[in-house]
Amino acid sequence: MMTKSLSQAAQGTGPAVKALDALNLSAADLAKLPIDEKMAAIQDAIARFIPTAQQAAVASQIFGSRAGLIFTRIDSATLRQATQDVADFGVAVTESDAAQIHRSHRPGPHPDHRRGLQQAMGISPQGHPRVVEQCTL
Image 1 (spheres, rainbow, N blue to C red):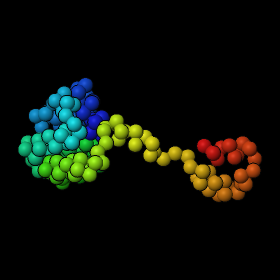
Image 2: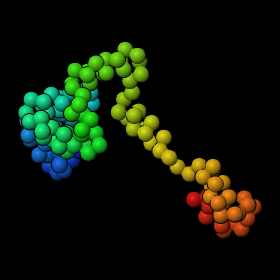
Image 3: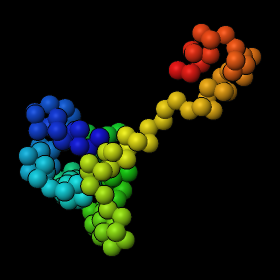
Image 4: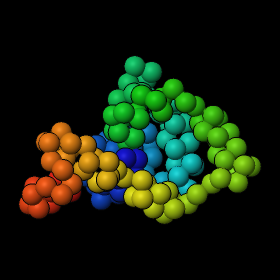
């Protein structure tokens, strides 16, 4: 969500535009940073410029509604340490690798789903071809 929000903000659209203004950050400057440094810069600016009662709302405009609250509870020092730990353990992946991992783990049709649907409908796998075909979708 953060990447999408920042991309939209760079085009002058989306809710992150107001948030970045309040944080005295620019989408263009953030685009030049690795993802961990972007997150830390945003976290630091939220802590510095935004009253505590409004921090979750501002974070939500950038990170999304689910992650916004979580990111207000993690300080930038913790994020930096996590980044260092990932590097130390040798498990870091690039943003493009992470996107590929995400794409490859999306749920899709699974043979067990088809079999369960066929059983629920009382159809044998050798049942009516059109019904079986519909069950494979």
